[in-house]
Image (cartoon, rainbow over all chains, first blue to last red; front, side, top):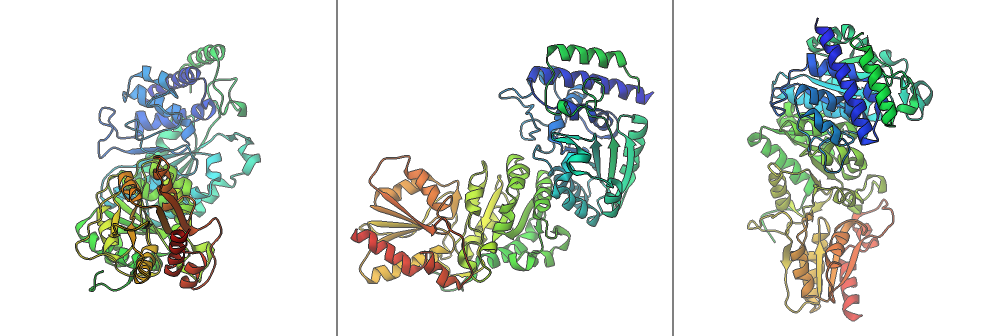
Length: 275
Length: 316
């Protein structure tokens, strides 16, 4: 069924994430692996897009505000056909289109240049306002990190998107509970999180961010919203899919070495498409 | 000098031309952060409410939102005081400049010329901040006509831009023949025998015009040029003026660090020559409350102080 093919895509993406980070010798595995299913759900199911025409004017727009998670997006784009899978191995190399954090001027298909946290939801709001003003049908998605929403600008956007009745805007939170200095709950707790976004007048949906059975219906429901933006809280596990990385803060921003790469890929492939 | 124009604040000229351009340019959208009455964007807001976005007191969100709209082909003007909007530097750095989003950042209330409200409301480092960003066009008009031409130019200019505007009225220094040209220096008064050339921008241009009149009465000839583009600034224009003069004097209502003075210093330091540069402006200190005229005197950028500086140079 459809979910099984999505699980296959997520598996391929995970392998690519490990390979490209190992080759680059730097990057962020924890937060790339936690958002793999979210990004897969968008690129291989929910978004209307055409890898052959990244500038198609009616495409859905996706802003990855947590720019350090971009390996998951590069992996999805490569497997969707935006560019050859081989190009993933150029990540972070001099002159590469695949910058350490996304650069929209270099890589067609990247909608926003991010990496300084907290800015993407505002940009996504602007993209959604553009669709509203020009009566275009596209939907705008924005992926946020959990530590990221400690930034005040996110709450400015949280306040303004409902004012503009942006039903065409869906924000998804990769709630993996880890940030560089420790657990999000210790560094600066976000709770009560759902209450906060409801109080700001958003539709709020909570899902298991690794289960397509949860993610896909939530994203479809969000797309039907007309007068309010939707905030999907996706509960995830940092480093998901690689046991020695799962839930470990120290894998936030360190690349695997060759041995760790081999072990990680072996484990990902052994797990296969089990949910 | 034009006789049919009255003194006008460049923010006022901006508000008027923006509201006019909205008719022809249907992709023009305007944002403000609770200062529409002060930035004069309210004229556009009243005429085109569907294309005006009131963002509340949240400049960072305004910058990002405008960037998102710019990427979809709209031409967003975002308006606030220069200090507040460029104070959200990282948002302009990332979401606008690095992203290649053609947002027009409008910063009003330039410099100590705003007077009474004091330092917290004065844009004094805005040119310095914006000039440091790759791809950023940085402009400062000195009268109504130049403001109108700049804003119209920005409707189709393919780069992000910052425009610095005044709260206070400025006398017209251009006649109807004037044409703003990006990057080019606008020579207002020329003298073959002058030892001093003054380069001014924005509100200090009128002070320099007055200083020129006073000096002429004293029998002292100077060259005077208006520099409406802080970046990209044409080096040849600056070097041509430098060549013929012993002294170059920059005059601006901005810190002497990072603005026009620094831009000129960077250009002339690339060549060896006898010309010496003196930079007038707010010299590494904070602004304060007061009468604009008194503050211009205090910080050494009034006509009288400019005359004093020029006389000092010529007697040195």
